[in-house]
Image (cartoon, rainbow, N blue to C red; front, side, top):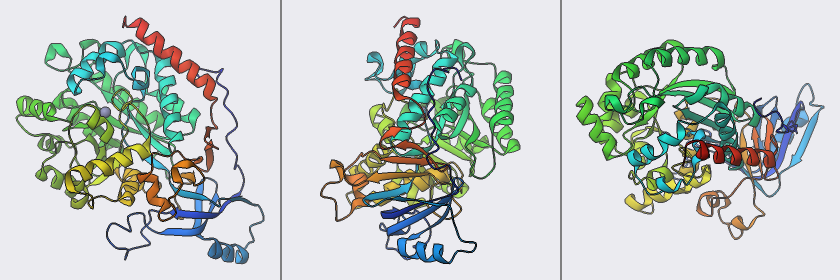
Length: 488
Ligand code: ZN
């Protein structure tokens, strides 16, 4: 641990054989058990009132009504003799939300004045000269802060797209932070190889030789990737964007990902400048470029995709290629409104991303879900995206994008990852008619408890896995020092 003086509190509130969450007001399962539900009402799967969830060893054993659960428990053979029960009256439980796109290191450069009012390329060119001074301990502490913020918003799985490695920084630093926070994590090994001198966007000093990039990709996959069910750490490969790496690196990375059976991730079709770059440099649109280089398939997900056209949407649907939708970032950088309605209708897997903290600048999953619903309504009308559909995109949608069938639902055999909301807060007052929809309409609210892999990482609105005071102190100091080092 780079910061050994951060007190890691014992987070095993439920290190016990069986835990029963009982008398839950509503559980939105996101499962497939409500096939006949009307369109736009069954998006959350079964919605069980007075529900109970049985958990053992980080996995959901059963979910049902209180009555059916107790009937099952009463007749279980052998009898369950070590049952611990938590009364969840007054609470709503949804699967933990899945963040499919982030740049955690950007937590250190939020609201930098010169970057506040720029669109993508100008925003990047303002921040690159600061980011080139990042140190390994900065990567660790910004990841810890960003993941803590996400956990406190009800996120239980996050990906991170780390695409610059100055001064000895490594993917390892963020992976270590995720372990310390207790977040289920997909670390993506990003890269940039085409600097300014070769017509790319980043300064040359932030680029790496392509052979070194591929060697380190191989190292981190071999060292950290866990393909098993309920894995806490996975690795994916993620050249930063078509405008910062070569065609060869895109292709070779795709070949390595297929060879190693890991995911592939990048930024694609983020705004009109991005499309212009693609047409000018590759003589093709981003979708064709992706298809040409092996960047489609169920193991691939692209961030943003604001400017996808109908042919590209069909390509993604046909190939199972996923999209990380980042509405706040898209609005903040004026990139446009992603065609999420068309993607969902075509059958594209869509999940949410908070995007990096320098372009969002908030890591709040329910806020992104709310903005997703509102932004689609701006173009398509008030009846074109429901709160439940937004909740589904935030949970099961993200799981599908990360190509995981063990998270995103509250169902037997799934990981015990969930966000537990206390209805007895001001945000929920007056929402008796539809408290589940209130999570989106009246949000963003924060969960009271968050369970990841059967552990309470957030308990009573507080981070249980790390001392928040020390974390904030370290993070603020790191942010201050970074700006001083970069002469900002
Ligand atoms: Zn991004």
